[in-house]
Amino acid sequence: MRTADRDGPLADCPESALVPPGDGPRCPVDITLAALGGRWTPLVIREFLRRGQATYSELSAALPTLSDKVLSERLTQLTSAGVISRHRTPGWPPRVRYVLTGQGRALESVVRSMWEWGAAWRDDLS
Image (cartoon, rainbow, N blue to C red; front, side):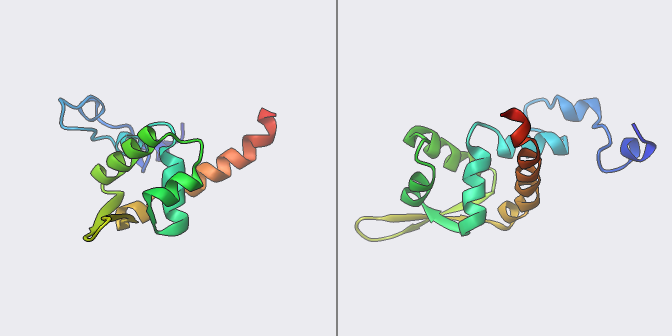
């Protein structure tokens, strides 16, 4: 490992940051993984990055193999993480729109890097 990596942005987290006492993750990598955790989460975020906002139905149509249960769980997770916000419009029927937050938009470079890494290795997996 290069010295710059040991002291720079990828420096090791203190041991106390890796195993928090229940307050949630403190290591930057762990914080990111908590926001992106769970199967389908990066793909749900990708849809928000493409659209900026979406309804449940739009997301369900864009990710047809994703079950309703898992989509609901991911939307709750992403809302709790501050990646998206939930906006309910009064009326009948009530309408709910999910909007990507500034914190969510900041994940674009992460998702783009995941895309590029996956695209580079996709052919090797075949």
